[in-house]
Image (tube, rainbow, N blue to C red; front, side, top):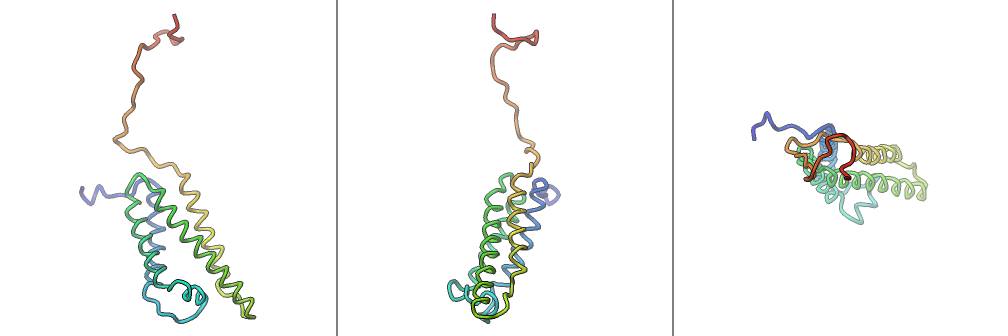
Length: 152
């Protein structure tokens, strides 16, 4: 396989590469992040934020590889799940901040991550071109020549 033949599989593959860029960027931002409080401080006490950073990197790598494959649905599902999880994490952070009398930081990210979740659902409905190795199988048996049925 040469680099010239290396191209994303259909429009959904191109979309997966865009999602991969976002996931890898999120992973890079959170993988080496020490505990410094902030909007997701509560989550850091449950599961350390760098763990989520490595999950984002894993999903980003999966999206990148899947962009060149025919079956892309599992990688889209993983990215969609991470986006939904992140939207809920920011929603919980906002509720915690409101309960503590603080301004709800991060609320603007909730619709952004939910929009990405919806975009993933829409991407699963996109029709990619069929692979070039698809064969048409014709049912064996007599064929009617007059356009009618073959009942005699």
